[in-house]
Image (cartoon, rainbow, N blue to C red; front, side, top):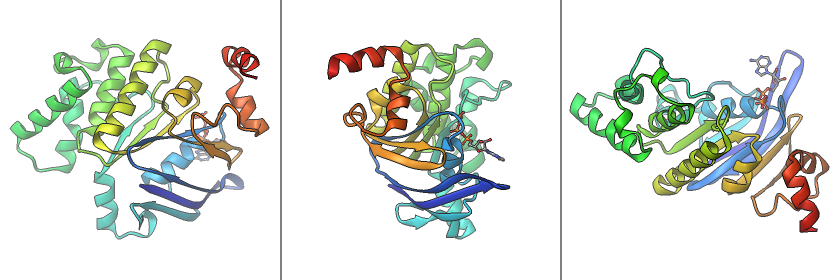
Length: 251
Ligand SMILES: Nc1ncnc2c1ncn2[C@@H]1O[C@H](COP(=O)(O)OP(=O)(O)OP(=O)(O)O)[C@@H](O)[C@H]1O
């Protein structure tokens, strides 16, 4: 479980996060949503340890990350798997080498064990036949799967996904969402997904935090979001034409 308490962050005089609190439970897909420029990525970076908040706490299973010793910080970092926007694969490495990268950096596992683990993860995301391909030889959806395999290769307790559907067609997006949800439940990970994809919100939003101009304006789940009576959230949800026409039939 990850808890954040009153997280604040400014850049120069620009207040980006104005005191955000929330709880992200394990075994669930926790979503951070909101319009562009509203502070989602900055919040995610504060949680994963890439940006230090000016104020507030980020607790991993009760341990305050930003107050922890160097060693404890490292221990938490080892338990984090991250799927970056765009996949962020190394172009000069094969799929297998990309997935093995965290094991090479962070463990002393013998090569045969690393190979077994990499192939287990590639199998899990349906890519065992692509192990020797280069990133340039595979599709966008496959690249995301490689990114996911790399994010879970360390047996991560915490899985962070920044815009996992960016650049994907709707059908591939649905498959990637389904995979993230399956892995979250199978490995009981605390998963946090930053997205503005309403499909994802309605498919996998077990817990949803809506950010607007640096504030948390609403929290809830995919069942309660449609009826939430927050104008800024309604505007976000029903920006989509199809959802707008669905709303007319719902009420
Ligand atoms: N390192 C930085 N230095 C200065 N300003 C920054 C920095 N990182 C982010 N910002 C600013 O913080 C604000 C929020 O950015 P953020 O990337 O979190 O938005 P977002 O909600 O993730 O948007 P998007 O959906 O477009 O990715 C923006 O105005 C951005 O310019």
